[in-house]
Length: 356
Image (cartoon, rainbow, N blue to C red; front, side, top):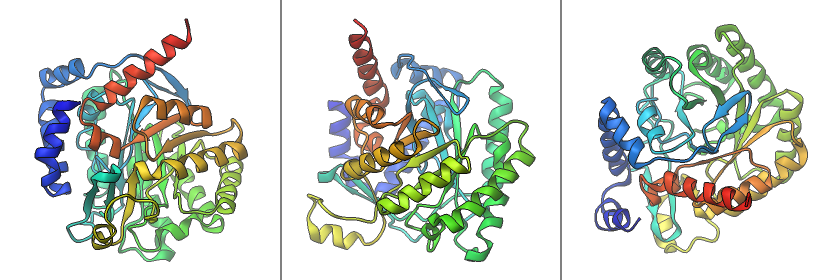
């Protein structure tokens, strides 16, 4: 922890955040590219077994990497070697797109937070599907890593063609996804969050479900990812839709447009401009949304809690609040490559202590 803290403070935080991300990811992918390199990472980042059964899938442990880190399914096994029980790739769009102009990724170190307005930069569904297909052939059935695929709307597509756009991605990606996520909650694609309205969300989910059933040889669990900025009535409406549809699960939550309660300098925050905020400041609202969802869906759905996960204690708290699984992104950025194994070992110690 101290070593990574020194590297972060003396080097990484002084480098543009997106450039630092690319450097780190490239290094990990280089290690992953050889069996010996991957074995080395897995040995250094070894984690205990903490299995979770959800959505008909066996997860090695409850901690997953949220969408946004590996947008193009380019480094799944290297990321899994860090200890994550599942990797969610994307957000992938039907058409390739460069995303928003740079700079578009910023750190708020004092708040242990990140602001991003990436804009779904990715190489498109066909490229991601090809990588997933080749990985599946290479890995066969030996890999325990659960891979989710998060799909979103191409920015250039008009609102009245949104369903067709999601369906195009689904047809390409569902055959290779352990589960599929419909992302309607990023704040960085104009009009996307409007799709969270139940009257628009229901036909979208229905179309994606039909397309997945047509192209996949098995039932692919379907989830929706929602924003923390919905009001409680909107969240209840989505919960009712999800239980009635039925979906297999809800991912709560995406990033927030709120800047309330930040400790960072107000002028700095203002200069960064718009974008979604992730990390520690999202913890309280993410918990509120989780509790509200579990209250309304009962035990019928898998709830994946995201937002402000930093420790084993956070995972335990989310579990008590109703989460089946959790995901993190910003925690990895501030915690470093040993962070997943560290908190999972702590989680196992808490479990074993409770069994005495």
